[in-house]
Length: 189
Image 1 (cartoon, rainbow, N blue to C red):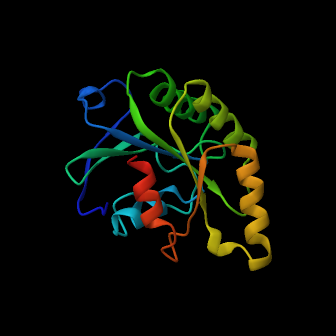
Image 2: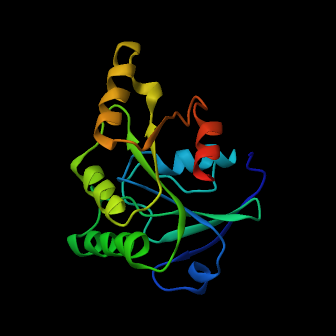
């Protein structure tokens, strides 16, 4: 499948009728500064659909995009490090967990983006565990593979795969356009 259209619909911070309108939803989650916006923009072949920033924690709401007039791509705030007060970070964490774990949304897939060079952080492991506990369908994106040296590539991906078990791991580079087709296919299965 190819993504032909992508439109920002709205940002939400809690209950909203759009979350219950039975349009399939694919959620994108990852720690702050992992390149989530870049992954989303590369998938839709646009530079500015999802807003990115050099400052971690810019996304403060659940941003919903309508893709191919068929499903929602849901961009969640990043978790972990963010330039915000402790209270604001706690509120973002609650919003993320509410949407992914406690809302009535039946996610078609949850795309967990990790940094291929860094590997799974404690935050990533916690998120993965919580998603597994709720039996979510999970796709792992090992982003920024273009930052790995050739000698690091296989070792890094093997380490990630060992930690995530049977979940599909997609090597990805928004900058080099690597993994776009594979991720598009995987997130819609």
